[in-house]
Image 1 (spheres, rainbow, N blue to C red):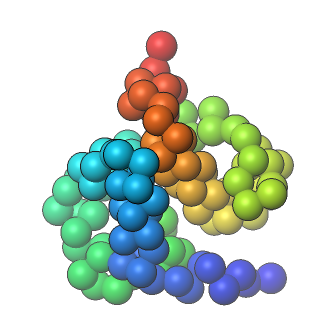
Image 2 (image 1 turned 180 degrees about the vertical axis):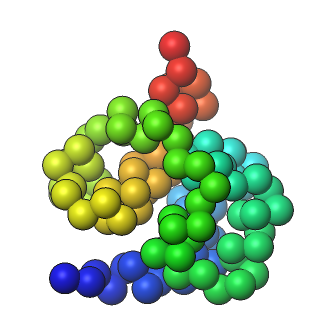
Image 3 (image 1 turned 90 degrees about the vertical axis):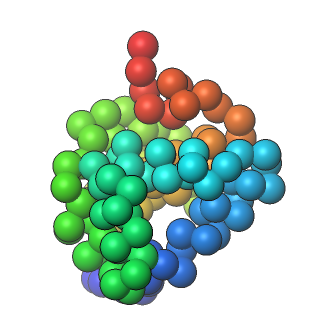
Length: 116
């Protein structure tokens, strides 16, 4: 079953991520750092995805290098445990949601990026 969120434009979701983080005193640059860490995009690649109107499916398909530490992202987002999501694309989307949530909740970049 194809979920509606798969066809949502990354450019529509991105400002919501930034807004969520900024409400909690974080910066757009930190949101970008989290997204780039997860997907392997650089700043130009991230901007290009927003400008081209890529949907989330395309955004993740074209991601240069998904971070292998994505498997360490655990916890509940939207009432569902991230580690129990079977659909690979939905899991990637919810991992990104969870990382932005962690950023907004004040976690350090080191913890968000599962370093050390």
